[in-house]
Length: 323
Image (cartoon, rainbow, N blue to C red; front, side, top):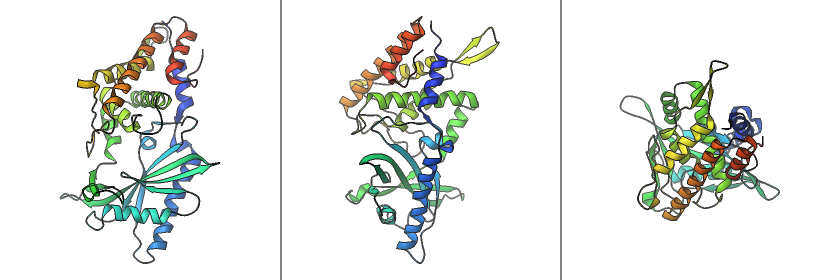
């Protein structure tokens, strides 16, 4: 039976993005945030709305992956305005952000969960920044409470809402659920493998491709650390193939009647992260997960490492290394 941990380590180093180590992405984030501050000053010369920002999404959790050719870099930034949700309507605040940033060659769009700033290079999408807009309130105990602005200009009034959100809690939950730093690193690697599999096997347009946060929530619910004891060195070695297999196999087991799957965000607003997928798309997801599971089984049972790598390249692409 082939030991593929070296190949998985190489694969992870190839596909990972660490935001703290990626100066160009940090510069893009800082540029947008600075332009937003200046744009708000231009729109509101007096009583300029103020805010603080934070990283969110995969860059906050340390689970970012390099985009495949044809895809672009996705930077998620939280913008917390220093006012209560009762002060302004959510879509109106999004319009401020839109007007503050709608300058130059970039494209700005108000989407239901965020304001997206898209950059192009040679007519191709290069990267985009999704700005999630939050208000700042306090509960009865003086603790900070955030609401996220949902909706866009064409939304019905019942869709234009400030929705209770906990943007800072997910990272804390992960740390408390997986307290060991090394175990948590394996958890992040498994998420990255699953994301790269998703990018390689699904179209980047429409709702066919499951979201990164949906896959992250699945891993949050299903991951358990997997290690092998190495007798010669009296040490434990992580086994990413087995850990990944367990997550994928358990995901398949989550499908219920008519091949549907439902996974809740583990923090407010606890929404179903697969709700936008049709029954047909969910069935396709299950079929592709089964193919992934079978590839992992075949690679695990293969005595020849080179053959095992070829098997895994069929589900991960050429970035998975050859022996």
